[in-house]
Image 1 (cartoon, rainbow, N blue to C red):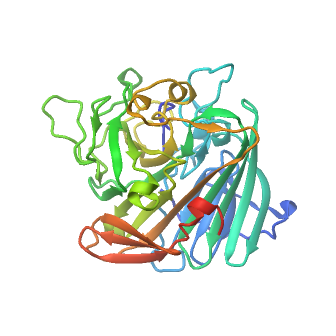
Image 2 (spheres, one colour):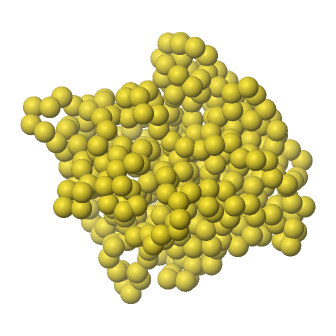
Length: 410
């Protein structure tokens, strides 16, 4: 939702009937204007749109007095249908898989992909909805046409956990491609009320080009093309302005910015790469876990009413925390060429094989936190669980089968 011109508050859903797993029994519910499939456990209810496979709303802790609905839903969803600048904007909400990730404005070797790929803005096909043991899984599939291939999406919930396990299995689609997840969170209006923490990074960089074009009534606040190693010290666009602290969001209203963090590898951090967004005033944190050998970096889409064209109209406030292998949000052409990141030794594409499937495994979830937690300092991994350690010394342990990132199995 970026170069493309991006996006993305969720409300708890009405609980829908769970299907028996037969295709003819698949239940579609219209949620915020989009036909969606719904799966649920006592702890979590998850909706995913048929159009584009966008996952939201998701309600965690639905069996408690304080349910958590962290994902953004674009503000035009409940308005009369209107023509959109890109297909991905039709559903824009929550988390969705992108291949090729980015704006894709340029044709490459005869391929012209829509922003974030066909998968993000066209209908997915229902395959099954099943429960095996303590795991409930919804399976959808998508046949790509611009570059021939197939993506099979599995979204799984585990009884007793406030976690979503995603697997996108890519078959075909051979060649080099940027790809990743486009997780987008709803943002409170209070400046600095969301605290961001990440696993170790090699460096970060602001978008090298103009991300928000003032000739299109879009405005950005960060200095383009700057490299740094501390998320609390990101150069601003104005001379002598103090650096931005991007661990405290949102910033000032009126701007839309893009940055990218390059993750340290699993071997160095001795565990998955991770990112957390802590909203202490609401008593929870959101987290995502990944294998940095597959998704090398994280793009931050900082959107706080900085775009005034259609359909944004100066009203969109969200935070994209997008785990990808890509060159910012520029798409196939920029990611496959030499670029500012490849010059730093960072891969901006994966090379997919025609005869060997590639699995992108990803974990997202929510954790309720005690008063005074403030922000995450580090994560500790033990078999089947993760402990979130706060900057104030508090510890909260949650059941998470993080081994899924390597095995793809629950």
